[in-house]
Image 1 (tube, one colour):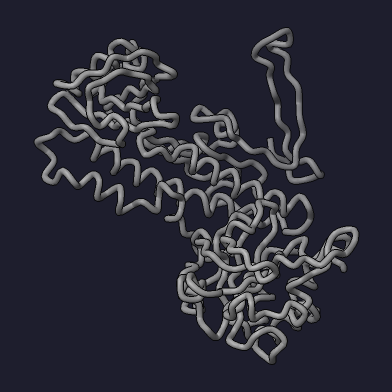
Image 2 (tube, helix red, strand yellow; image 1 turned 60 degrees about the vertical axis):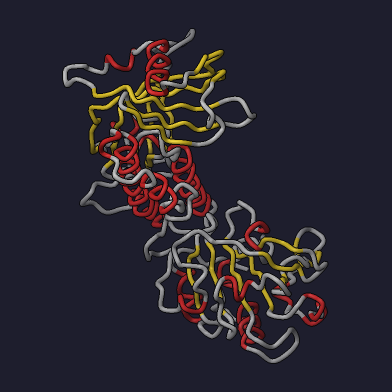
Length: 459
């Protein structure tokens, strides 16, 4: 049950189902609860959420196998279509193991899930039937299963009613809120993205950095992504299940996979405007960093040592927001829009750095500010860098030299990501999705954006 009062408003009743304490119940009180308990989620049922969708009348066997075979493309990912059915074959790590998805055909309406008891020997025999005139001699099966393709997504990913208001306390992630076939290989990927999206927001709220209303964005953001996954997987599964006579172009399956390559790699998700994702009025200043999409890294030079560094690889999963300041044309120590912005960021009472940094934290505890100059690293005099870009942190107040970068020769990030030579500010969320793009002069907009989701702190 979820109450409205107290520090721990969620009451959870747990029952031991095995061991000496089987049948015994205990009560736990919590601030928040995350239901990561799979497709038959008890948490989902407890908060009254509904799984929407159904199971198609088609079954597949899946197995990880070590085999001897005369099939020449065994170490190539391939889709195999024959008059006897279909196979999706994926070579796995190590040079020997392979994953096979084997089409077991249509399932009768009155089957009542009996197809899930299909013996392993039947699955192997079906694989050989589809592969004929080639064959596989299975030496070992590391894992196997039989499933019916199901496409379901929960009506909401938290405990707030569809027409209700308030801040949620109970959340659903992974299979508890979306299920689909395994052939696209996205179940674990999207589920981990659910978890990371939820985790960083919980961290911000529980540490007093953000208001509880931030938690409303979890369902708002992740439910559309789950629906995109279902739509993608339904199309992919349909293409995979076709018979040879239904295939007009043998390249269609490959073309579809390549055309949607951003989805399985995690780059197709684009969050819409919210309290943590800005609007696109200034997107033209940094076209290569689309607002709402994953921050797409690029090589830069560290000014302190000249080493090449992927800008995105220098970020850590530590719950901090990143502010990347892309400089205008003048260099360090010269009058510029960047210099004015840096002074405002470090000194103005309206600055998010001043307003939202806790008194007992380092200056970069909440907002990690980095600068990228247009000049080569050899032309940057580190002694003239604005102090906000080389903050003194830690118990000894040591200067952090590794927040200053140069575009340099060869791969110029300004060109590679279509960043304006007049400069730009790119804000990146703790989950590495681009939150906003602004000009260096838009200090009021930057302050207002952070004020939407960060609480004032006393410095």
